[in-house]
Each structure stands twice: as structure tokens, then as C-alpha cells.
Length: 56
Length: 249
Image (cartoon, rainbow over all chains, first blue to last red; front, side):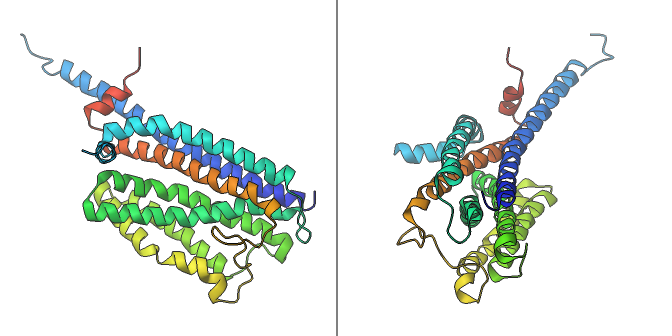
């Protein structure tokens, strides 16, 4: 194949950028779900400790 | 109510969109990947080498679809932004902003692969040619939209400001398209036409059309996945997001 290195380099750029395009939203999604999970856990903790010094 | 209109209204509901995007984004990615795999196989192993450019012309099979996508995605982003500004549809704000990173990715591929092709064919990696320069400005516009959206804390105000930039920036698209006609350009003129006769041998076209269709379908997957993440970010305080995040037993 003529200009083999150039062809390989171009296709590698294509593959790497599309791979990033695939991975980046998945990471964002995972981050949002994790944040929601932590927020939910914090809210549950706060409701259970609402009156920590109460005698009732 | 017409079922299509009802579906359109339902799609505006964040939980409904979450379910829709979660279902269809992986399908679009997979179908896009398969169509592109077919196109790439044809481009690399089936199509004969060009009599003048040799095998370097195979770069065209990723360069041209990416270049078309870079402009089409910007037009779509401006359209969504205009709808969001006029009718205040939150989902359109989300979709407009989800277009930007995917469009920037395709613009980057266009510039990088064009540069790699330019070295053996033109003898230089870069030239301040009208087509190349306007495409570079398009990349900066995409980065500007992404930057502006992330620079403002309030999501809705951020989307409006960035959307306005996208609408103004759409004026660049005809300049990119006609740059090879309006000015003396090192970049070649229009070789492939969507309608009308292409100046390319018909045996070389099927993988190109496969790549064009494949990149479009891939983009739909990317758009849905990014919009899904932004939708969850905006709805982070809502109960349905908390329920979604709960670990499944």
C-alpha cells in the first residue's frame, strides 16, 4: 500500500476520537448516577438524625 | 390527539426522555458501528487505489463524512437552540448542547485527517486556505459553545447564551461550503454530490455512502447519550433520578 503510514495515522485519529465520543458520555452518566446515589444516601442519613438529642 | 404529537409531547418529559435515550442510544451506536465497519472494509480492502493519489485517497472515506457531519451537526445545534429560545423547550436546550461535543469531535477528525492527507499530496500539513481556515473557525465556534455552556452556573441561562452563539455561528456554514468556489483555493472543489453526478468513479462510492450513513447513525447514539447525561444533571434533585440511581437488587 502506498502512503501506508499516512492512511494508518488518519484511521487511528478517526478511531481514537470516536472512542472518546463513546466513552465521555458514559463517564458523565456514571458520575451523575453516583452523585444522585450519594445525595440520596445523605438525605436518608439526615432524616434519621433529625432529632439526635431528643428524649422522645 | 394524534399519536405522533402525543409522543412528541411525552418526549419533553425528562423521565420519559431518559427511558427513550437509555433504550435507543446503544442501538444507534451499534448500528452506526456496523454500517461504518462495512464502509471501512470497502474503503480499505475493496476499492482500488486512485491512479494519481495512490492509497492516500482512502483517507477521503473518513475525511468527507466527518466534514459533512461537522457542518450538519452545527446546523442541527442552531436549529435546536432556535426552538429552545422561541418555545422554551428544555429538552431542545439539552439536545442543542449535546450536539456541540460530538460536532467538535467530527470537526477535529476533519482537520486532522485533512492535514494527514495534505502532507503527501500538497507537501504541507497546513495551509491558510479558505476551506481549511473556515473549518478551523468552526472548531473554535464549537469550543466557544461548549465553554460558554460550562462557564455559567445556571443551566438554562447557560444554554440560552450558548444557543445564541450557535445561531449566530450558523452564518459560517455557507462560507465553508462555498469557500472553494468564492476564492482561489488549494482545497479541491466539490467532487461528491448528494444530488447530481459525482466526479468520482461509481465503484468508489458505495463505501463512502456507507460511511456517511454510519456516521449519521453513530451521531444519533452520541447525541442521545450526551443528552441523557445532561438531563440527569439538570434533574439531579428529583425523586425519579434518585430512584434510577438506586442499586438494583
